[in-house]
Length: 205
Image (cartoon, rainbow, N blue to C red):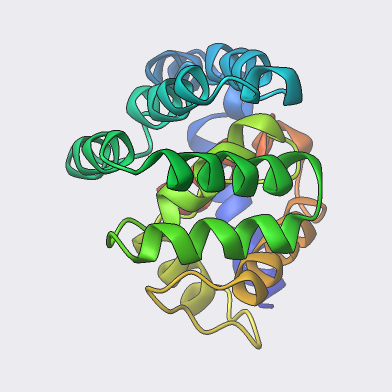
């Protein structure tokens, strides 16, 4: 990891926004992401008891992806239509995988989600990572491919090679790298991991 580049980015960001994400301009930008509301929505609709009714759970899973400002409009529409077209057995399988991802065996859940969604070409990084991003905002983040590739390159993150097909090993490795980077700068840059990823993206030039 190139720590000096991270420190340079921190200094650059604070030069423009002295209070980090508490700066008025950043608070204004934050309004469009509605992070607090999305976190509340995830905690309400993705808790174990909320995943028991299949039809309701599927619609809530769609709702979170659809309302996320970090998922592309194209991916939202394709995901919505794809999930509604799943068979009853596949819907149960999807909910079971998501439940494992959030509340049980994370690796099993991640791989189960990827396996099922890959059949329908829906296993995209943003869609696989959006749920933990909102359920665990202090430890997880949504993986936007362009940002991920640029962060790896700029900060020389060793052992991480981005690939379009989601893998659990890369998921864990990149998340660990982000959380390590976060510890090296001011907490004003990371009210949550999505914001910290935004800081990295905004200082990419």
